[in-house]
Image (cartoon, rainbow, N blue to C red; front, side):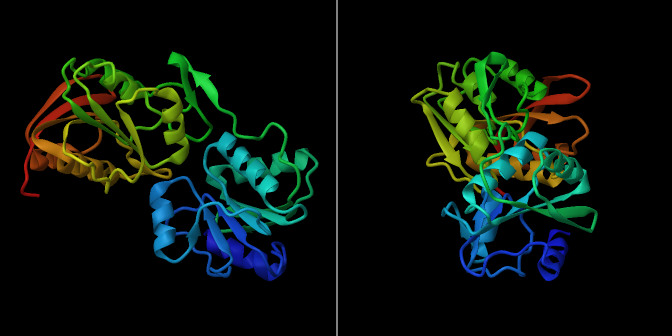
Length: 328
């Protein structure tokens, strides 16, 4: 576990933060423990709203507060995103300060360590424990070529490394966008909107007067802002499961996540379904794309009076669910 490697690195002197100054922790995930570091010195840097809320509820400062005396980078799975995060930490920590990089083998920490060594960076460690490694770099100029760089993909959309479906529109979302009706309603919510593919499709329907774009990943939401220039759109950095619109919506569209890290978690998608039902007017409609293997039928039947498949293929189902049931 991350805390075990951090404890060992501190005990062995592999990671030696200066005695004063803030310690930035980049991209930690809910449940990560940093009790070996003084909570008064730790600054949590995360763009994922549920993680930000989890750490804030435990008394951590969340946000940016440059400069930092040291940093701990919690590697994300996407290699380009991992490189960008390390580059950012190297630039935001005071020159000469330690930048610890921690990750599981399944998240590619060995590959990142090899790349750092191949670039001639001085590496302290690694500490190996619990199927992962922690090693330490010395802060200096941002790593050339590792910075986060927006890119344009099919359809003229802008994405950045690490967001879902960064290289092309997700096939399920493409199918759902094509299936949306011309008259979808006036008030619409795109729940878990990502970088805005479905939102742009919704805004081509002339019945729409308001679109709430709800996304927990700040990077993805920033891309959505760049991709959608429409006065009808309102952008919300929020956990879709707890988002409360100003007024109930006539329609909700979504391609909900069903993974927590690498682990399939159908309950995550089910929580999106429950949230959508709460957000709709009594005769409102949910437009959903989901992988066929996900066990959503019982939940949908408990939440909506009418549910029907409206298309799909061997992998995806397109589902229309209407008239949410209020006794939930």
